Amino acid sequence: MTNLFTVAGLDKDAPRPLADRLRPRTLSDVAGQDHLLGEMGALTRLIRSGSLGSLIFWGPPGTGKTTVARLLAQETKLAFVQTSAIFGGVAELKKIFDEARARRISGQGTLLFVDEIHRFNRAQQDSFLPVMEDGTITLIGATTENPSFELNAALLSRARVLTFRALDDEAIAKLLQRAEAHEDKPLPLDENARATLIRMADGDGRAALTLAEEVWRAAKPDEMFDTAGLSDIVQRRAPIYDKAQEGHYNLISALHKTVRGSDPDAALYYLARMFDAGEDPLFIARRVVRMAVEDIGLADPQALVIANAAKEAYDFLGSPEGELAIAQAVIYCATAPKSNAAYRAFGAASRLAREHGSLMPPKTILNAPTKLMREEGYGEGYAYDHDQPDAFSGQNFWPDALGRQKLYNPPERGFEREIKKRLDWWEKLRRERRDS
Image 1 (cartoon, rainbow, N blue to C red):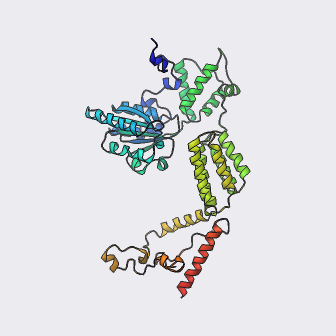
Image 2 (image 1 turned 135 degrees about the horizontal axis):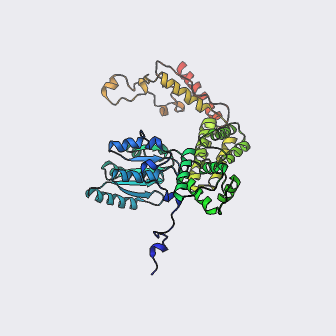
Image 3 (image 1 turned 180 degrees about the vertical axis):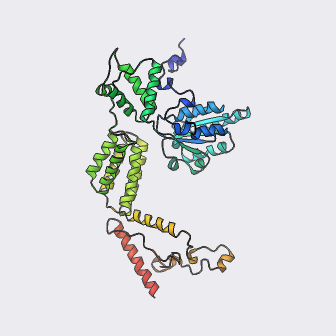
């Protein structure tokens, strides 16, 4: 009879990837996360305290998020349950929660690890709250996206966010040494090729071990590869720049300044260089959103809409199809009318708020929900703008001790030309009604 596990690809003797065979067995074996797992690391302190609490692991792929979650369950004697927001839904979560409740009755807690937790919608994220609060589960969610933007505030308020860092060259080098010891043979790479492989891994430990495995498979007896030979084997080029170092900041700066300078061709050139170097497209998309609000602003309000839509399109399509959406947003922003008036106005408002943040608004524009407040003059004399000619009262909204300030000065460009006309018209009405 045919073994069903063999048919399903689950034969216990089936070869396992090198990255799986080298998966750390203790927290001290995890590479590159000393800020979390070192002697004074955040997770080390939590384990010592005896109270883990729910956590969100935020960081790039291949940095050990899943492994650390599994080892934490082992360390704290919790049952480890793993699911993914990509494949899971409400029905699966309900089943997991029911099993965790039954487990809790028998005296064992549950550590639920949710990969790609940001892919759950808001309602699905809310479903975790009751079981987190009553202790049914200890949640560890993993995400590559900024939790502040992608996760519910209610969920974040019940979990601590811990940041996993991309592995540096030293950590990747140690992983390769561990792989060589495990395989009992050196990687057939010369010194330059070895350095290139480390760069190709791009901070991803799993990718480094996968590349090493490809090299061993391809090598003939006594064969040694140089950098060119390595690139031929793995069909991958080393990043043009280290994303954590100078090249990363040089190219994003060049992209930003060419968009600001209204040169779409140069902007596309630098964008293509960043894609070619392996830059995270979502990082680029976020920077394009920043360009839309900093350098275009209300001169073309549609720029922000398009930049945000490009980010969502990439998130939906992935690489390489989604890269075109970001390129389209870059072209739009580069060719849009430019204005930093909103950027400058907000900066001025922030400074004013820091300097005069204790001043009370005029009583006329404050509500008076109590008799005492009405007797104190709250709301007295307020003019409802919709009842006034031109739907404009011209009344004072600034603290009396500060007086009216001018912060936003739109230029005569793009849509802000229309905004300036409105502001000038309202100022004219304000003067007329003040003088009458």
